Image 1 (cartoon, one colour):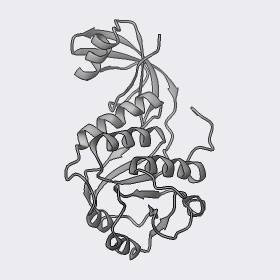
Image 2 (cartoon, rainbow, N blue to C red):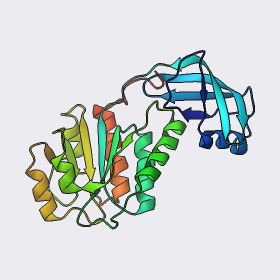
Image 3 (cartoon, one colour):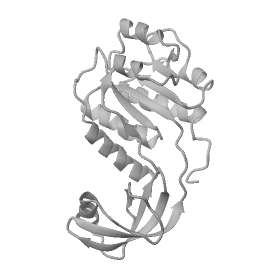
Length: 244
C-alpha cells in the first residue's frame, strides 16, 4: 500500500503533533480509506520530509504524530517559467508539468494574443501542490498572479530571460542556457507567438534574449516543457543524484 505524501506548511519536527487541514482529512479518510496508525509522509521546503502516523481521524478532522526526518531540506534552483495566459486546460497542464520539472516559480502573463483575460491563481496553486506531492519534490513553486507583459518587465529583478521566439533568427536555447546559471527564466508566448511590437519591447531590456526551440512550431505548453527540460539539464539540478 502506497504511503500518502502531503505538503504541510506547519513547522515539522520529530515528536510533535499537528492538525491536518479539512481537505487532507477528507482525502485520507474518504478517498484513501486510511485509519489511525496508518503512515503518511509530510513535507515542506523549510524542514524537509518526515515520516508520520495518523493519531486521530474523523470526517474532516485528523491529526498527525510526526516521526523521524526522511529527507533534509535543500534549495531548488531558481529557474522560472513565464507563460502567456493560454487556454485553461493547457495552462493547468503546463503548471503540473513545470512543477514536476522542478521550476521555482510560474508567472502567467497577459499578452496581445492571449486567449483569456482571467487566470485562477488558487486553482493553479492547488495543481502545483498536488504535483509536488506526487513527484516527491520538497517545495511548491510560487504561482504569481497573472499580470501584463509590461507589468512583469517593470517589476523584474534583471535575472536573464530567454524568450522562445520561433519565427525569429536566433540561437538555440541550449546554446544560451549553457552560458547562464540560476536565476534564469524562460518566457513562452501564446498560440501565434508574440507580436513584433512585443518582441521589440522585450529586446529593449538588457537581460532579455530570444532563443529557438528547434525547427518546428510548438504549442505553448509543449514549448514550456521542452524549454524547462533543457534549462534543468544544463543549468539546473538534473546532474544531482535523485532524492538526496
